Length: 421
Ligand SMILES: *Cc1c(COP(=O)(O)O)cnc(C)c1O
Ligand SMILES: [Zn+2]
Image (tube, rainbow, N blue to C red; front, top):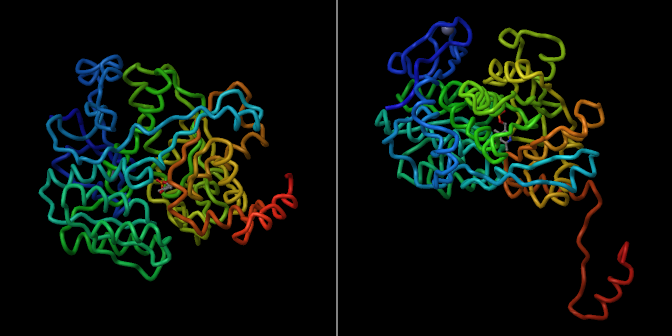
């Protein structure tokens, strides 16, 4: 038993029961993304915020009545969700702000935010008795699916661009996935994966195409609000590639507003890399995201490199309906943000994770936030995911190790000459 009312197409508004369609509205090729709609009245009768707060299950499953899974569903054993929300007073002072928090999704089982969605995919696939689950990914969604599948011995086939960072490819191989390194971009891998899923009848986890991924991702908003004692923040900063995370954050907040569990809608601010700025362009120029042509995406932040953001409808709504913004930052600003975020909070993000912080810096410079705003910055991926990016980031800010021989005298010479010693 779950609380889904229907699946509603974001393009034509058609409503379907979850048994009628598996992924998308069939009227628009591969673009008919649907939204999962719930019976909030029934949810409100089943559960209260106070009951949730008492729940000792510190994972995304504490929100089961708000998720597209049955109350007796078998969930994977890995602990997904309930990542820490750290107050970051030193970062706040640096920025001239009073309240900044960093939510660290680098702490997920496979070290990125994507575990939230892949955990739901594994449950849905098992409901359908799928033999194989598949996804295309820039790397993290794949690693997440791979790890969660390993935790329940579920076969899976993964499509990633051959240029994905080695750490992410290593995760896939260690977890035992069948790995297809695609000679092309993420967008190419996505198209190939959709074709393969149709050809072989595999369960399809692809971002946006599978509407339940938004539902997994929304749990970050539910956690943020619960961790702030149900006082919603004023703004949430998050990086954007396909736009599924920002759409998911919006969904979670809409759920909480519908239930009357929070009083206001936070502004959602989506940050893109300048070389992968489809959403920023569309938002600034008022372009229709369905007809806008794909761009040629290039950025050091591989996790947000997307020429055609698959969840662009939900992403645009997330910003427009919350009075938020899309902001772009350069690769240099992204890399520079990695050590700043790490030194100011102890949270080490991969390039796409630190992108959110780079966006906050820019928003402050542009006067888009006020000092009293309560601001959450989401780190979406662990810094160890991309060591090449991390090493570039420290080089950029001029941090290098000292080389010493094995004797103390040599060390003393180095210490004496050390800048700032
Ligand atoms: C996937 C990902 C993002 C972007 O999420 P979208 O849903 O594609 O917008 C950001 N950061 C990291 C680390 C990711 O893995
Ligand atoms: Zn439709």
